[in-house]
Length: 294
Image 1 (cartoon, one colour):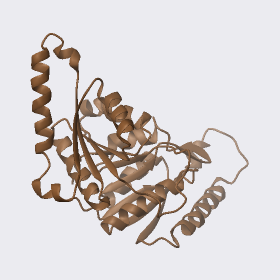
Image 2 (cartoon, rainbow, N blue to C red):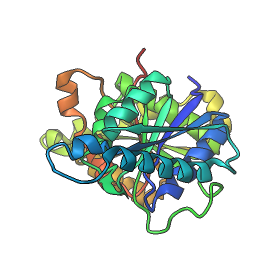
Image 3 (cartoon, one colour):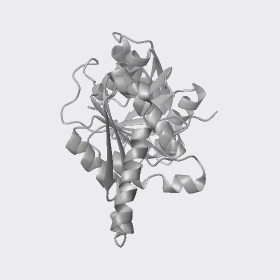
């Protein structure tokens, strides 16, 4: 299934990693001819200071914060080569971003693992972690980079890794990974992780399983795609997030794509041992994919 995002939302926090977020967002919007929505969430000072006595005029301060954010966002979008919209919200970042993504039927959200904007926000373990559990669309999480992208033309991908567990979520992640590989003319790496400890007394069974899984991974790729896409498959051993990270490092992967479960309470509590840990430690962007729900 060809994936064609029409609206991509970028969470902008004016941190040192804003250029990375913008570079990635613009590159994806250009590839898909999608609209870019830049959103910044300011702190609700009324709630923050409701139990404190202060001589500050909170309303004036809040209006000043919004004007300042607006001016910064205006500067960011003025020379962008894609259709864009600026949105400023006030409140809790994860809640505001999720609500906006739903209201505008956004196809993908892009955020960084951490940043600062007056108060620390987009912190892994808070905003990003909440977005993974609440968004009804894929979330692309960018890690901190030692050297930020210098321009909106600098984001490229040559190798994309898809973690496959053969579930429906994994199937959707494959569709996204394949679409990205086509747009960026990138090589596609498909991987499944098994735990050899479960087969310690059945070495022959483990070898047969490995061979079967290799064939299953290879069979996921439509024949028509092999003419333009280089395909690599690997059955890895160990804890999924550790094995995928090690493999990504060895192969020089530029992005990892994973499927994540739905929105039941049980599923929310289980959201990833694999996805969360990968996002915490991955040196490359991680696209967490779930089915968009109406």
